[in-house]
Figure 1: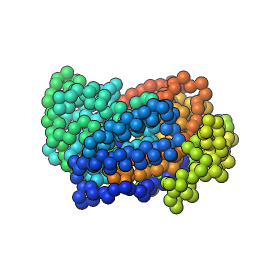
Figure 2: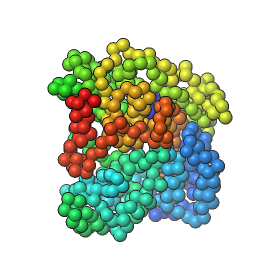
Figure 3: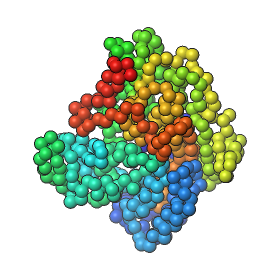
Length: 494
């Protein structure tokens, strides 16, 4: 649900300072079941629609203006009775999902996120099936066998639950990799928002090893950590996992660069710096006469594009263009959204924008170095390169895969990326709380485009040359099937 979204080099978050009504349901008085009036809901919907139409550069990339306008109008007209926050969220979420943009997010208010009980389990999804991967309630007496497949939840089949959730989840392009990644990180929160809020979860499960069925009764827990978004990130941090790591396998003349994040914040928290890490890695590769380089971005959900550019520069064998173009909605500042910070950084500036065809606007090549041809690095690594990708490879990380495929630099192994193969919407990102309900809306302001020549998989992620999937057994045993397969490729000289 909440993702790491930063893309280029500046991101400013702020709230639009207008509201037509007093906010009665805030702070210490907040009640999740509070019903907002029709007029209040219509007012927030107007803000929701206005921000999307004014600022989002890829609003009609996958849904035509005619269809989106019809959906917006019908949703507005369906506001015929008072609704609580959760009910209003359910009305707006399908619109956001239909934009097919993983950087455009709708979340409940921070007050909502800070209350309620949730399912204390993380799930693992494969081929549309769900398996229990982690139990947060073990220390509180909740006994659940890990690795079993969930067949039903409170009488609903898992297929029915997933079918109810997927149309409400944002993801890039027309594939569902990113949606399943969201479910793996935030299933409990989506179940709460979209399905039901039970005190007990009655699970019918299947032990796939013994073919035995079993009934589990899992209490919903009122716990701040369980309500956290992207809990898997927190667990990795607590286990001492660094966002940047380097491994030498001298017997194979191979180096592995683990790049779990391109996000500055993650690097700072681990007391790491990307530039220093990259320089040290390339120095070690030269010193040890490495012939094969493995770059792992399977857990990388994005970050700073500058780091992606510098990384690719160190392996690129010919000149390349990092981005083909960057599109924005107009050639003037959106004065209604202006504040002191954004007015200095926004791309909606006539001095930085040129007009294109059909009323489109593009950032000038002279403004972004990422839009210029970058000459080949004479000191770049000349050996074989293998890129490991997964459904969590999103935004800046999936763009690295786009570069690999566009310039035929190496072998991609693993899963299809969660990010699009034709660019993404990001850059400066508006983060607002709708003035009355305080639903959290994030809207990107730049459409970053990079086309892979003659790529046959339209509206998808980047597909690996070798598809290799971890199983639930691999996850529970911490066995890395994808890396093992890659090392076998290296041994065979492929």
